Length: 181
Ligand code: DQA
Image 1 (tube, rainbow, N blue to C red):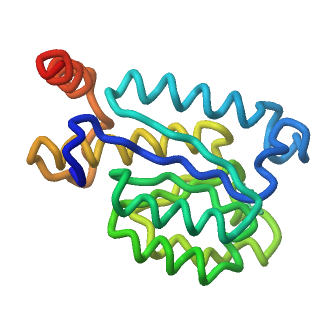
Image 2 (cartoon, protein in one colour):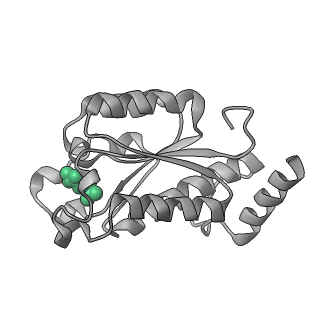
């Protein structure tokens, strides 16, 4: 873990236009709002025994500044870069620079959409990508990242094909927290 903090701290970043979730093209992005997504992530974080902070920006530079913050203040990041996925070398460079695992998520399956969405400049510098499952893309990506970080903290390397974080792992991390408080 990056800091003296015992509980892993994950950042979730929502890129441009995601503040309009629920209103914007509901046939593509669904009817749940960004507040619904953040509330679901907070519930999942509690279940897994990790902390989460969720932020949204329409500004590329602000997203980059927040990624830089991950270097010292977070253990990993889940990002939906929105339209910047397909255009932003600067966002890609920021993800490369943080030295912490990053998971890219998309509500829609971008490969089933317009050709310009088929390229992701950011995916290659992420540890994984989840797309096409609506809000569940965030929850699946978050669970995978938290599992990886908790396993690393326990000294057991993540293996391909491993099941998602078990109730046992979440329980033991809650017990560790209780013992330390
Ligand atoms: C998106 C897909 C992008 O192509 C689009 O520009 C978005 C949302 C998604 O979550 O499906 O803004 O990232």
